[in-house]
Image (cartoon, rainbow, N blue to C red):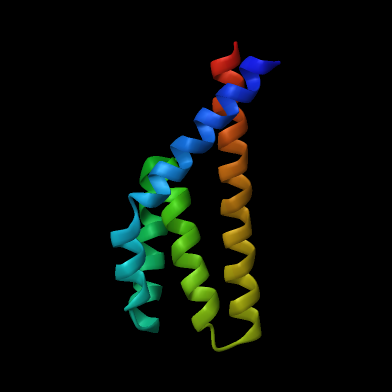
Amino acid sequence: MATNNIVSLQAAREVKTAESEDHEYKARILVMDKLELLEEMVRFQEERSREGHLTLQMMIRGKILFKALEQSAETQELQLLTRSYRRHLEFELADHLKKITKTRSE
C-alpha cells in the first residue's frame, strides 16, 4: 500500500514538472488573439491525429489552450464546447496518472 502512495506521488511530480516546463507555451497562448487561438487549436488537433493518442505534454498544453479558448469565446455554445474539451483533457490526465501508478506498482 505504501508503495502505491509513493508511486502516486512520483507520477504527480512528473505531471507538475511537465506543467512547470510549459510556462513558455502558456505565455505564448496568453498573447494570442482569437484567430491565433483557433489556428493553435487546429494545430493541436492535427498533432493529436498524427500521434494517435494524447501525450502528457499534449494534455497539459491542451488544458492551457482550451482554457484560453473558453475565456475568449464569444458565444455560450463555444464556451461550453471548449470547457467540455478542457474537462475531457483533465480526465485524460487523471487517467494517465492512474496508469503510471498502476504500471509502476506491478
